[in-house]
Image (cartoon, rainbow, N blue to C red; front, side):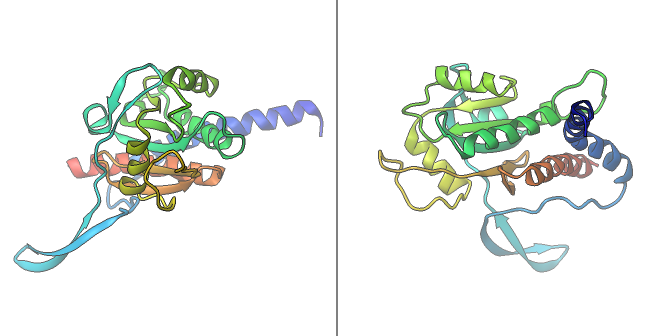
Length: 239
């Protein structure tokens, strides 16, 4: 196969990968007049009895992710509750000097960001519906000045993809206790270290709706499609 043909196939493949989620959105948006199948919830906190339509039923209460305040790559203090209320959130964890997992993880986060980036030629874009967060697990090394350079390396839109640093104990407690990442025990101290390839998807009310392998292109595509479905869920519930 010639180099010219290979380049054409590569460009075509990249175009399909980027446009797939938005194309899926347009198709499903037109076809979903009835019931839609959306991603389930994760993190059962309790099951309790309640009355519905005069009948006693068991109601499942799911974990709602609590707030966290950190510093983004622009040096701004931001919080999950104050700044991202009503938005879907996609979260991963990284550190700048990571030689193995993080480059691929950040590449797939870039794919997700670009899949929902605003396009003036298209009416249906989801850029303002979803926020991407990459949180450093080595905040003592990764200052906001350093993570801005890293963010620029991956073409981050600074408004819609935040790279975050801050208090290590708060970050580690958030990963373990709020996002339910199986990273082993720890207290966020000097010897504690989290290194996970997972991407976590939160819905607009910040319930956990998906875990994805951030090193897998297939899993990244599934995350993109799940974001679309959650948008449809929101529109469906408003009717």
